[in-house]
Image (cartoon, rainbow, N blue to C red; front, side, top):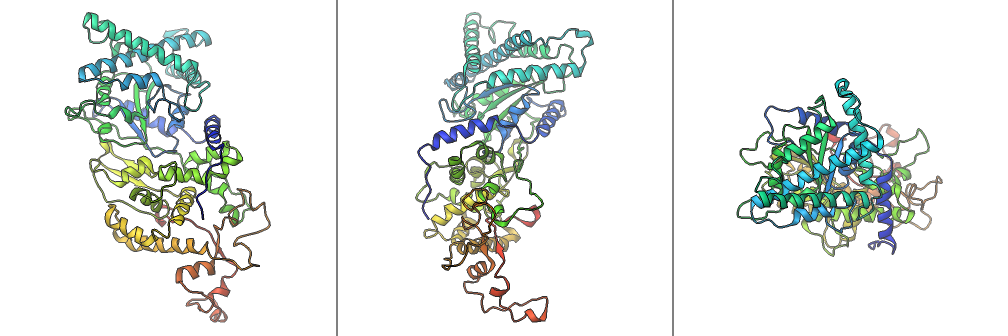
Length: 565
């Protein structure tokens, strides 16, 4: 087996698939996210220091797309702090990145810059909404008769139009005119605010312009009768926010994030909620200072199996269940969305894309790191970690941040974390192809033994189950490599569909094995002379296992605990 390579046009295909997938109809729901934000907005006991929460989850789980969909209903102010000029989608907002990346040598100077930016952001949004209202005619005609329902309907109209303008023409790695101009206006206004402040010495620009006063103007504009003060009328959303957590002066333990958190404290009584979205976990992002209590638990929502195919009553065979097309539609939405939007050449490379994401490496490393090895093992057999606090960095956190492991639960301040690898056949298949190439360097049982000793795994009473799972998978993997006789058909082959079609390639890819092949690999001997210990009729007592199961097939590439199935 050799490592497949992308064809010469692979990058173009990837860019195209990414952009097209974003334009596909949203599948799933934003109801749980919106309900969570409503609950956080209405909570006043204990009184929160600021109304914000981290939205943290593994890559490809649909965080950005879910927020973008909710932006059709609630006014979202998106600020993407990803790498400037990077090959990312959605792309970074360059002016915002430049503003927050400028070094500040004291908390006070950093605070002035952060406050100026937030003031300018709210002011620019208000200005753009008024222009939208003028263009679309969504003004409040009679304030005295406006109800909460009227307010929310108007906010939805404005939010949807604002979102459309901010996303219009968005391309891989770059925004276009409206959004670029929006953040250029924010940066210019923020620079002018700082200049005014330097002249008169006031806290933020002119004496009558503070973060609270400008934010209040925005919320009053949206809700002039103050009928929806417990609703999240405005969502300030920082994507890739971990870039804010880099300490500016390590000896003082502050960063742009801690300063921004203090700024958000000043608007805690307004219907504005802030989301910090990222795949990376960091202590400083979530652990408050002693006086900053009333924290909201991080949000770890994800949509799973939402693009899965619905099985018809007939016409499905094992080779279709084992096909690339079927497995790619199970699990997190990223792979299925890009697969459906991509060209055929891109679809044929989808397992290679899964390998890249699982290893967090664009190239195939000669040797796997300990974390990469653990990521592959964890995608195929259930592994749990010993309980540790977040300030003790472990492989578990690294797996979530960079290797596709999922967060199931996070308590306030990341005091408690539960992670898992849900059933994702595509990632399991990617892990199999990675490990199969390296079998001569690292047998699966010794590799698992190493991690049981060094990687803080907690098998508890399930240690035997973990080893048994490794043995079963090893047997299956070996069975897929057994040579076939000249006239022996591929296991699971049938006359339905084209075996080279990704919808029917399960047998052609040797993902299906016969039961005798599996038993031979598991027992390390042929089962043609092994008689059954149990049987349903006396006449079957002398039928060898090889004959009894000659027309039976098996397909699996990972195992999950029975309690989660």
